[in-house]
Amino acid sequence: MITVTRALHFDAGHRIPDHRSQCRNLHGHRYTLEITLSGPVSTVAGAADHGMVLDFSDVKAIAKERIVDVWDHAFLVYYGDTAVRAFLDSLPDHKTVVLDRVPTAENLVQIAFNTLAAAYLAKYGDQLKLTHVRLYETPNCWADCYGTDA
Image 1 (tube, rainbow, N blue to C red):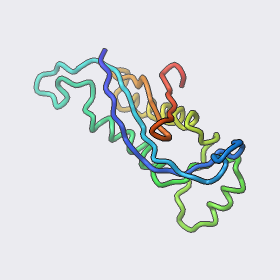
Image 2: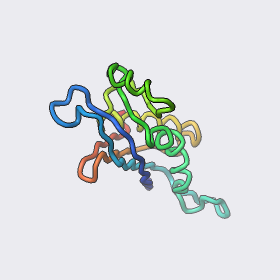
Image 3: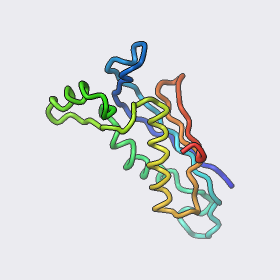
C-alpha cells in the first residue's frame, strides 16, 4: 500500500468554555488539515489516475466540500455554550457552525476524520482507506486521528 497526503488551510474562530486559561475567550486560528489516504497505485494504462493512489485534486475536492468550505471563516461553537450561541445568533448573516462537542483540536480532528471517511467511502468504496487526519491548530500544536481512533 502507498499513502498520499494533501494539506488544506482554513481560518475559524472558537472558544473552549471551561478552559483555565486564555482559550476560554473568543479567538481564532489559521488551521491546517492534512488528509492521508492509502490504497493501491492504479495500473490502468491510459486512465487519468494511472500511477496514482488518488489524484491530489480529488483528495482536495472532498475535503474542501465537507470540511474546509463549511468551517472556513466560521465560528465553531459547542451547542452547550448557550451564551456564545445567543451572541452569535444576534449577528446578522454570521457564519456559525454548531457542534455536538467542545471545539478542541482533538474533537475537531475526530469530526473531520469521521466526516471524510464516510465521504471517501461513499465515492470510492473500500479501494481507498482514510488512514490519518491531522489538524494543526497552530504551527506548533496539532491533533491526530487514525482509522482505529475514529
